[in-house]
Length: 250
Image (cartoon, rainbow, N blue to C red):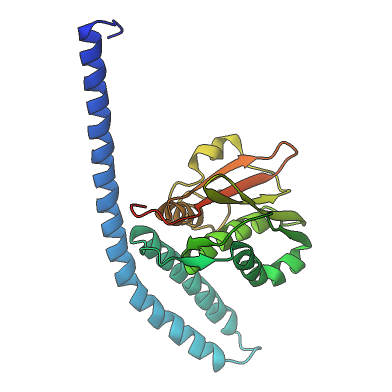
């Protein structure tokens, strides 16, 4: 109804109510799926540990020239990949409440970047960290935000298999701090842009599709956000936003 009279107002109210009901129903469905996924992940976790433990034990007892060793290495590697997926699934379905403490964000970025130095050197990537001016300490959960930063850095590395540059820059906004991770890769394809943060969506071979989805959940649990766009000169930019002070209802 497009009229501007009482009937139009009533129709608009009904439309708003319908939208809220639909959103609530969708949230309940997602919660149910999350509960089921968490339960399955928990049950799968223990047998995976058994398989992984035996595979590693047999690898220690198998010589390098043993014809069975490649199969054992495949078992160990693929089991480890399944364990990472299960761990991410549990974190996504049941995110922990952040335990915040005042943190030097630039120092945390440098610490996280140190974890991928071997990969950066192997791929010939130039990784630069640009600390922001007058960026104060931020109240955050170190482990959770470190995981977000690591996911963003690993994504940037995956976009640069033949080398390139990654720049991590912090800057202060009005009541928040932003961390921008940019790369000189091919950028975000138009058909992928709307699905980037969707669980289980991945444009990379072997990706779990949970890294960015989990990163968004962790950012929002801090009262912040995570967005992505293509830079004017090429490449992708992921921007993490964190409030300077903890929000009680985040």
